[in-house]
Length: 153
Image (tube, rainbow, N blue to C red; front, side, top):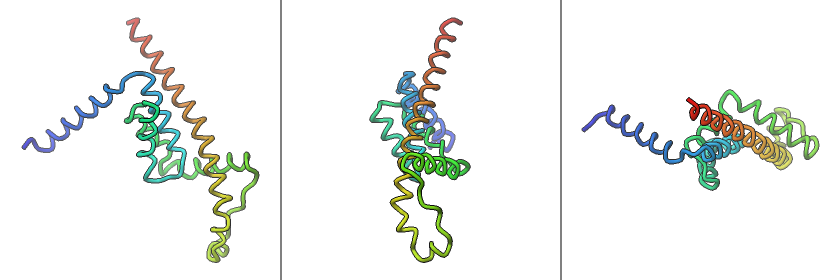
């Protein structure tokens, strides 16, 4: 047996192989963009898997797709999803006000479900598309600039 040190070395080699296997600038930028896009949706527990699946569809880097989903994390959940909901409200019109505790106890949240979720999902889609384009584009530009800089040295 090689022990924990051997397993860590094998994991490191596998990650390096995977990183170099999908090493073009375009693949890296598309992977990051796919992850950021899926990270904008409130689908906890599935963001990483769906980000990797989307990266596969667009031939993007899987590791960067997984990393990109961390645009939403415990520190950013509330501001990100509030912003997504606000964007959805700007497009679809004002949504219902958040219910009081009394209304929640009476089950009023179910009546507002479609109005809230449609605005949140539309906002998540629009913010996700813009964020994916921004982060993917900036990353591609950074990789292009670094490649040119390293070619001159």
